[in-house]
Image (cartoon, rainbow, N blue to C red; front, side, top):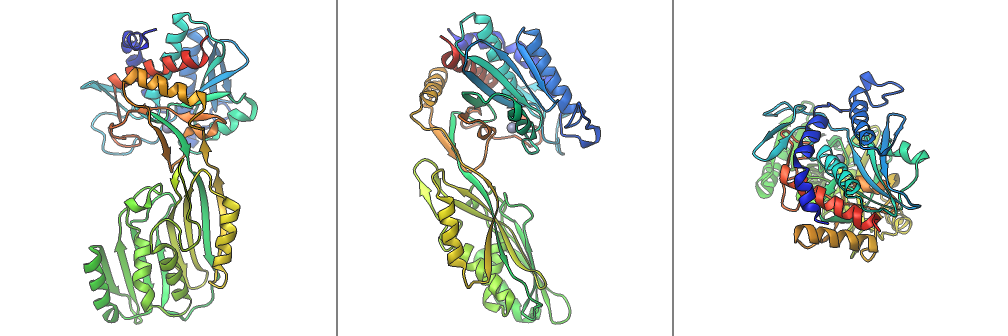
Length: 462
Ligand SMILES: [Zn+2]
């Protein structure tokens, strides 16, 4: 079957459907939330719209409490799941066209959700229709599983899999082509220092507000006169090339501000952690409890993001190095210090063992380690026939090598037992998800629909 030609024939319908779906503002809206619309009116309408399309195409449709739903075709014991979502993040500012009125120009569809995840959802949906219309017999059921809350915490899938069947195999068109088969574990680590009424030189310290970003600003108040710090601070700014500010704040105190560079926690080395840099600068000038804080930060994180000093470092061939992002660093005299870290750990990371070793290393440092959250790694073996099939399909449809990717972030695919992220952002395309003027190329939509149709027929066809 020439799936690409079939997809080209469907181009008009694909674009029209995407326009319809984009025109439904499906941002989470607690104000209009109700029993029938747990995530608000918009997400409900988007879900209803897609399920209605499934009904019109003569497929089995199920709505699960307005949180998720599915469209199913075929017969068989086994189930192929295709996981997508119809909710979007808020539009934000800076759009040149209205974000919820899809605008087609220069071969692109512009609008919130164009690439995340309404475009990919429509491509996958048309792929299902193409396979159905082709009349080929399926030996598995094929199910488009649609979530309405992917962007705000996966409540859709938590609810869905409470009562619905877990697919035998599945893919999620909600990330990158070719295939992401390995996603690191994501652990939230909290290093906390017991506080005491301080007479030390550090009054307060604050950097960062979320663990998944490298903090780009840090502020500290110290019990040292500004005249004393001026020389060293300006020398430090000169050497590091960083921007910062030192100002007197009365009572022989001074206030420091340092700017770094933000980056995603997946690769902290892409950014400059303002908190770590400021703590390292302050450390030699500190006394008392505050000195234990700055010296902990400097030792534990000053030499990079791989966790060597803490004994948390680890790497494997499938997913590469474990990374630690010290996303929130805070100290105050009454409660002490706290560093909250997002650790992206390799697929084969021995969690218990490593944390125990780290706790041992911390003894006597005045710092304790807590595991605040943990989302285990997700991995499907490269030799699995399922992966091989997706690779063969992708290579046939694109003429490009289907490299397997490993990432430090989590994709929607991790809610599946045996699932991978499969598109639909093609290599080399800018990632405009969550940005103003989000777009998807019409050619890419068509190409992806062909790839998904081929994948469905290979994975579920006779
Ligand atoms: Zn998404």
